[in-house]
Image 1: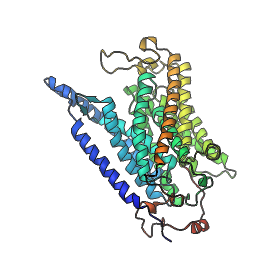
Image 2: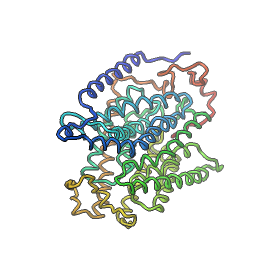
Image 3: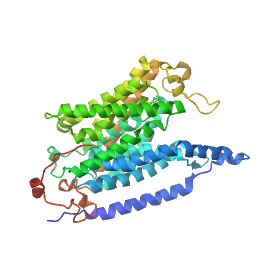
Image 4: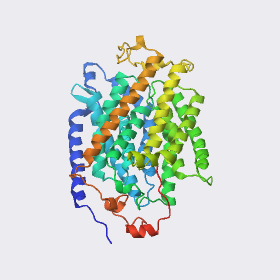
Length: 473
């Protein structure tokens, strides 16, 4: 029995990719440059050169770490399905590249368009990678159930919405969020859940026969988790505004990850009736502390980071055990990779924790007040930015706590609404749609070697050989 290939895939995917690359070639040639035109009025461009060297020295080490997280860590983490390992890694590779390119264009015109050009710096590329992460996380909610063409559409819609939401919560609400807990994790989570709810398939109320894992795929996924675990302090600290804040963010992220990992082992053994450890929990809950602590990693005390890491891992473990089945059954949200447990729940815990720290914490204990962190200008003589709740002269801890809560609400609304709209667009019949029998199968999209162990077999044969239960990451 042979698999039924989609003839439109051969037309849509290469044509779409060539059109996108052609458009980006034109945009980059017309608008992107390394030289700031404003320096033409100076006798020297030494300032621009110095800024570039500063980026190379201060940002490039973190840039490499984030690179490994996106392409190696996330890719391996998504390779947990026996028959969709190529799709987990290779499609992640495709979407990550497109997301970064598209983010550079959108952010460039939104933030950096001056004198008819966009001055490209290493920091701009890094910011584009942060934007690209949102698409990769959201795609995890519908992993294996959508075509690459549909995921490209998801990315194309999500990136501009992310940029607008990021601008809103930073320029109008002045949120404290050094590691992108609200801007990245919560936004991408509920955007992905919105898409997943629109693409709900009643036929998947019970586990699909191809949603199986093996010991090798679980090991690869756990290896991806460890890559992410190792480099997460760079992700949470690179955008800190001072060296002191960056130092605190690195240490606090490690503490949250470490405490969360130990808690994950304890929770996993406690949840299982026979006290066995679940790779689902290890692959996810061990990272939950890094998500939760990101919002206040540069401000809280070591004890606070330790506590947040423990609470985040507990919520993630319990989410996989109880909340995911509830969402699938009652809310009709099939969250394939459990992004709500890893990104949504810890993100909410971290944001609530930041509000508690702002209201109750001794904000000047570590030598950098919330006030100065929030309004650090970087340019001498720059005017204070006005927001919906006032300016630096009227700043109070209570106002900042309100900022945090308002930004969380806005992000939740924008991401969920955007996910619903994107899901409706992805359902249009003009796009490639895999049939339910072809879900979680590499052979629809890849040339699969005969001896790879991922060769397509019938549902009847799969049912006979079904040895391992479904794993979520």
